[in-house]
Image (tube, rainbow, N blue to C red; front, side, top):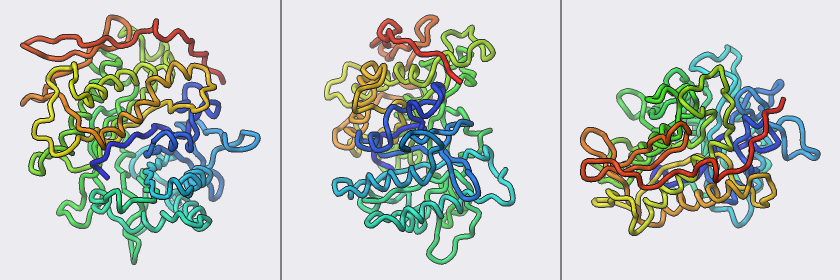
Length: 427
């Protein structure tokens, strides 16, 4: 499983018309995302009432777009039920879906109150959905596999299952048949270390290692203006350089010979940007809402798409790409996108974004079936390609290093290519 290239979505439930514009990250429903090829879902939750769980994006509740009429809060039970319903269809019975569930009530490690029960709520709600499902049963599977099992798990073993990646505390002591509750990524709650971090590693509890922990995840999550890069504020070039760096690691760690791999773990590359400034003179107190997620996705997605095209091309125009000594086709890991496609094509700006979003899922999936190449990295860790900002605007140029100097391969699409206007934020 960890060697697969898997398309996913960031904040998968934060759909258009269910959130404020600044929080909206997707066009499509969960079923539409799964139909498009997404196999990794990112779900954020908070407690709701005495036993319930609601879906959120940050401090905002996500509206229940499945209700008739739409309204109220989207519940975790509804999300699980919808995923189960999709997976129970005959044509989907062999599919595997990964769902990361993040507790947003408590934002740091070990800050939960004495009566913390999010883990119990998730388990009980999941059990109710599992019990109501005639064919699909995934809860027991997630309680019988350790972190080592998740790292060794094959697609054949996971076939037909909904896999839990758990970013909430599970204080229960494993006993009997219950070895775990999904893949334990509770360390992600340590915001001081991992919030807005371009590269980080996560370890999970292990009974088979001397330290008691095992490396399970390496990821990139550079997403807000807080980044203090060389331009004093996050640019699209900064983001793409972080994306590029993790693509290299994912490809080499999953195609190199066993003795050459740095980390034998899952790789997650997040493409989302929460807010970005138009120039280095912008400050947080001036206009922190200048660009919504849709704007950032509309500019990041074509940059990612162009790079994936180069890596997949039999004869790429980007020099320095190679697959020498590769032990397989090459993996780009799990890549999370904002703004999944809307199959009906009815939303404003859809025609602008579909060109760069819908095909990206297919490009990621292609890495599982086609040989690919990767750019070089020297002994000092310097890679043979980079992204550079273009003037005052946040657009980026892809450059490659050849014969002692840097050359621009192509120019990112500028604002003239996107004539639509982003509406002002509403209360």
